[in-house]
Image 1: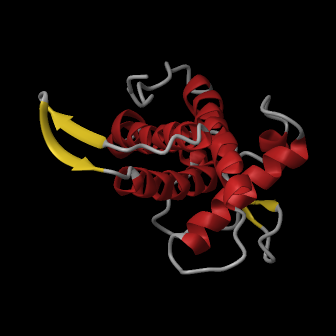
Image 2: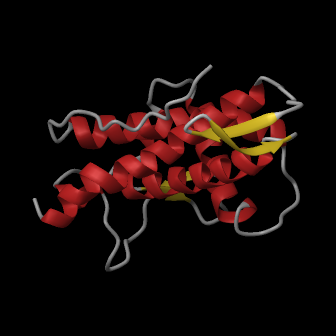
Length: 187
């Protein structure tokens, strides 16, 4: 295995998985319906931010998590069809793109994703399609026709599915332990 691929396994992929786990945390938080009166961020027990909203924290975490879900699904070989309403087996990669096949493993097919133990196939597909579309459209463009409550539930499902797929189909397939990626939080 090349040094570049080893670095991807030890640093770059775990970093992206941590961002996806941050998305899971944000969705957990948003689904509680908590509306804080005070949000305080501290470093070494010293407050550095005090505000009445957590959007300064949750919005970028949600957006980056959605983008990295898309990146990791594409890494595994999954993308959207042309109308962007269903999952599709990935297209050709760019000359400098790295995918699971660079590790000597097969790309995943849509059936591998839809067969994951996270619910019915149509629910899993809607979660992935919504997440990829959010990364494509809502993060990069101002768009209409959003369903925020459904979006959060779908993002949440995808944020649990993608790390499972990466760990199972990459790390386990290579005989490696799962990386330490889970977002550490209190409460």
